[in-house]
Image (cartoon, rainbow, N blue to C red; front, side, top):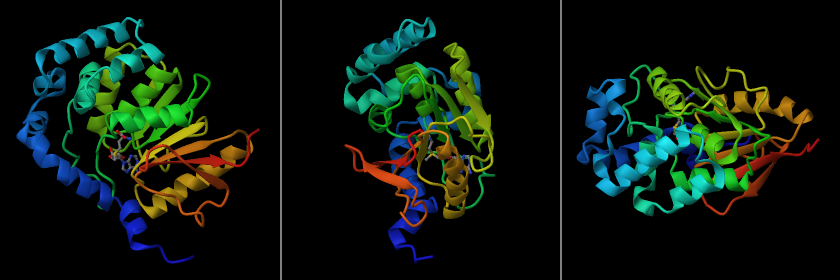
Length: 267
Ligand SMILES: C[S@@+](CC[C@H](N)C(=O)[O-])C[C@H]1O[C@@H](n2cnc3c(N)ncnc32)[C@H](O)[C@@H]1O
């Protein structure tokens, strides 16, 4: 096995994601929402959009109602999202999905495991578009956090979507959001993504790989699936070395932090 370079080691052991989270934390703590998220019970975290001005807050809540009624999906939802000023798009999405901002990690999160850090909405949308994800796909987010990626994959593309997440409180928020929006096509499982069922997946999303041994376990489970159908892996903020998966073809995206890996089999 060739030696791994330092930057890849940092990417795969979760250190890079942790550093990013620490860098993001002071700004968010200043805005007070992380402090609130720690104190508030689940039911009170819904409308924590004090960081947004009133019209945007109202717009997110209206969009939530339209999504819950089934009227707002796909292209129309994407256009609505793109109409929100870029700097507020992530908060607007959290408002629509009724999610809290950056909850603290569970102290029982294993050492070295990548912590929760939400993927930027612009990156998610680009990943869904360029993968591409369609209504016939089964989308799986390995390490799904609050479920933003899973919920968007379902709402924008119509795909059945599953999130697998180690931290129970994050899963509870995601499940609650799916229930609030009345979404039957999304599922959230609490467990280790390297051991949970993934057999139906066609597009896998990983934001910040959670350790080399975990990555190897995931790859060893995805590889047999490619004998049956084409599989695409979307990797955000890390790269899969060719030596780890020679059966995957790397495909660049229009964003530097996002790389697609397609299996060679297309049948
Ligand atoms: C960087 S966050 C990404 C969250 C989500 N995918 C997103 O983009 O918004 C990584 C998530 O993976 C979870 N995680 C870490 N190791 C895991 C494992 N072995 N199985 C399942 N989830 C894991 C963490 O708890 C964290 O919520």
